[in-house]
Length: 439
Image 1 (cartoon, helix red, strand yellow):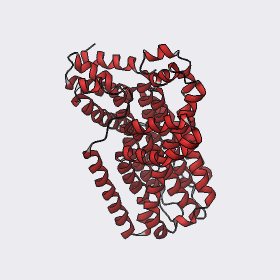
Image 2 (cartoon, rainbow, N blue to C red):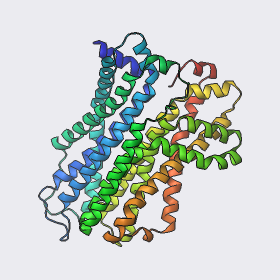
Image 3 (cartoon, rainbow, N blue to C red):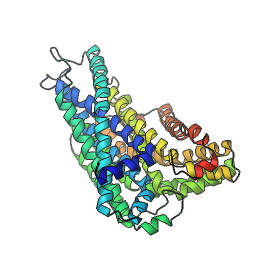
Image 4 (cartoon, rainbow, N blue to C red):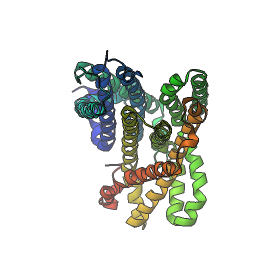
């Protein structure tokens, strides 16, 4: 085994939860890409449905959005997994590992995760494509003679997406890990994710926000049909800006929620405020997929409620994107909780009970949900306020109960995913947990 492969294997053994989180995100993405490309390829050459958009064109649209979405979320998941091993990378640097060896190690691990996730994601995607195709057939959306083919092209598309996105995420995380001075990392506070974001990141977020605004204006200047088809892509442009601005969004949400949490939750609220402020950079990895869920749910529900009789394809697309983003958000939140074994063990050593730790996680979840849902609502409004009237689906047409269900569902997702690993973490004896960094 080469030195790079040995380092990658040792890294996975040190933090198996980080590798598992990356693997899960890759599987989700592979399944969605496989399903969308299978439908698009099978529908190639099919005539238009009811004189409207052809099934093939709709499949291609879903495929493009799913590829864009997958690259975005996988890159974030891989980058988070690398960031969680920042201290281990610094230790390797301290004992003589070169920056290029760190980058090669991350690239090898990301490649291994992508290759392992590919067959699983492809198999799940095939099942998803079959269910999708049968549903469209029952609704009369499949023209005569069109059958579902799940073959080589969906496999190649999934492989390409997983390979490119995993390497991009690994490159971004490894570049930062390989450039940081080992002494600075090893003497830093034990709270992970407390590094202040740089000015370059802030400038990039403003640039992408300006680009998203420009895309919104361009979509509004076109036809109503083009504007409707471009809404998902414009939303994703806003998501990039939100992802870059995540640390500042988290700090803003913490400041807004702090008085209420301190008054209602006492010590647990104070600990949650302090922890969220200290971990603002790490929490940005959770804020982005939550914002993605909220933005897509609100924008698509506006379109569905405003269209009167939505096509089955639109309903499935809404469920597909929201479900995919929800799974990625849950996966990210689980990863963030699992890395806090040492922190929770320290709280237990100084006298905090299990209920106190659960209360802290719930209070932090409220801050995360506020940041993610707030950013998602902002993105949805930024897109649907100017484009909704043009496409015949104004934002004012969304019933109040839909807002309530969307936001409460977002909060439930955050709390459930954040608390899911606690049972496992709290079974570890506190003194044993202090000697370990994660599970």
